[in-house]
Amino acid sequence: MNEQILREFSELTPDRILDCIEKTIQRPMTGLTYPMPSYINRVYELQTRAGERIIAKFYRPGRWASAAIADEHRFVLDCAAAEIPVVAPMTFPDGATLAEMDGFRFAVFPKKSGREFEVKEDTDWVRIGRLVARLHLAGSLRKAETRIRLHPEFSMVADVAYLMESGAVAPRHLSAFKEVADRLLKLSEAGFKSVESIRIHGDCHRANLLERPGEGLMVIDFDDMAMGPPVQDIWLLLPEHAEHCGREIDLILSGYTQFRDFDRSTLGLIEVLRAMRIIYYLAWCGRQRQDFQFRHTFPDWGSDRFWEHEIADLKKQLLNAERGIRKGT
Image 1: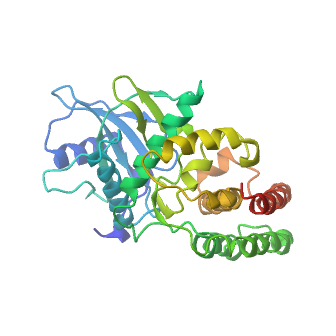
Image 2: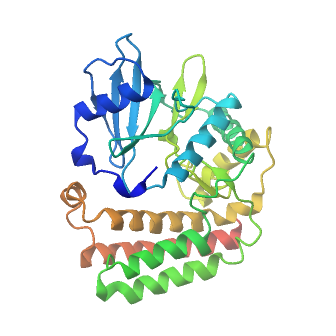
Image 3: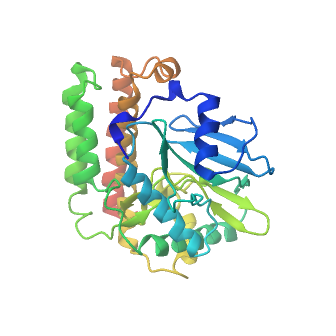
């Protein structure tokens, strides 16, 4: 698949969408092309003439290499094989789950709906823990060499370097940003030395857990899957900072350890991981800052006032990370 010839989304017209999908899945389509909410990729609900509703996901050019998307699909398929409720990509007649046609890369999924999961009682946290443990059992089956490695010396170093070298950080704030980033990196060095790294969801917050009647909890949106520590998929589920969520953590882990062991010492890394997520998101926004839609939505992104606020937040998060490592939570 030639990564260099991929087209921009502005060229993705309804006729092209239908032509790509119809030729790839070899089924006649109706004219339905209903856009779904998605900023990063372009996602559409379509319908075959037989009445089947499907979801077509067109991947943003330049974000992931085809091999990285294939790693995502492989993880989801491993989850499906383990009977974890997920939305697995459809296999095309040629045996692939990712196609490229007319300069666009895309995958097709069956349409599955559900309601966002609400935690109402203690047993709900336990259910979540069991689900995440099963997800990690599937994640530990193989590696994903093409995906981000969630580790300060790899992902955070790369994100900081991008922000500083690309001009995303306002010049007057470069020194302050580098100082807080260096302190976070130094703080995390010892804690990550022997931490387990497996395939993880990477963005496992509660909005990505849906309740489906008769099936239980379904996990969606593996777009940010990574190689990283299992605790990453735990802390994103918490309603507050870890030091205020001891009860929720205990309940999640009581469910998790029914299926898989968990290294409780890694709970001390939660606030470092939160700081890494802040920096990752800043780098992600930095890469989108020339996009017209991004500039329209976030007109103040990158300004002096913006960076004053972000650096102040990172300094507060550094204190949280220091406290978390000392307490082990």
